[in-house]
Length: 398
Image 1 (cartoon, rainbow, N blue to C red):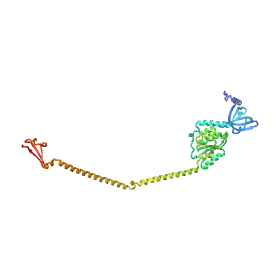
Image 2: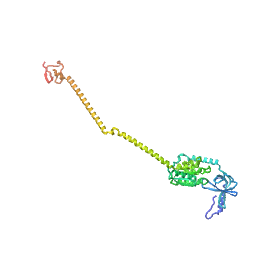
Image 3: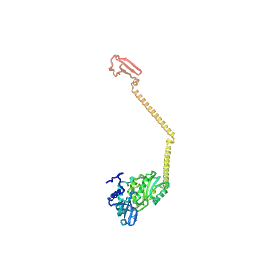
Image 4: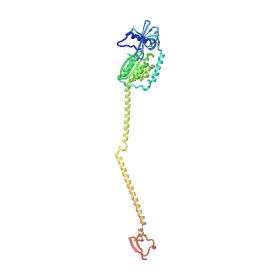
């Protein structure tokens, strides 16, 4: 039950500490996992700090020397402690009294890493499509590395040898041990928040599995996955493969390889520019030569080489067509004239006027009907006689 207190009715310190001690005492023995730091053996008692590898938290552990009589119990070792929580009322301090200590074996660590790897892969943190490309020429490179480490020198020297103008923001951190995860994650967040930093390199030299465990920690892996700045992992050597390599945007086999991936080689770029310039010059020269050849061929065509000649040729064609039209028209008129003469001759030959010219006459009634037989006539009929030189009216007498 909650302790009822007020400014008018406070409780003494001993009461609070006794209640806290009672609550902690009811917790019973627990198994706790952590990393050993500040190991100290004094007489028959061993004192150490058990630190959480993924958080900035720790607890004091006390135990008999026989409990910790294990070669694996050294600074930096991962252990599982069976302990009883104790609260010392006189000092108001909390600690764990160890009754058994077990070192976390390599096989168990590998099994845990494999399980974590499957979990993170199922969440999609290792998918290739979430990987971001590196900038071609970063203005500032963030470097997370050990203090005065060989990895730092390798990255800086190789990068500046390739591109002397490159700028670095170095964050020295612990790269192994209980403080490594917290310091690396905090450095990553500072560099990721810096707008000048365009790419971040996390690097350290090789080491044993235990040394590289911080770079497979879930907290660090998730921090790298959440970073907005591209991250290059250069942990250990080619055979080393912590989980950080899988979640980072790019993996470098060594710190030297990281420098080569992040910074281009100025000599290679100058040579490439020269090659591209030569290719561009050849392409432009070839294009100009092709256009010049085309222009020459166009200019050599008759229409452009001698424009007046084309006009004259068309003029000759017009004159030729005109003469042909005139000859065709004259021939047509001549043929029509000859046909007209022939038709007139035929008409004259068939006309009654020609018959009249030969001494014949045409006898007609006043209405124009031709008299074809004498039997048609009667005495007193009025007739018209057509002669070659005119007409005469006659009357039948008998």
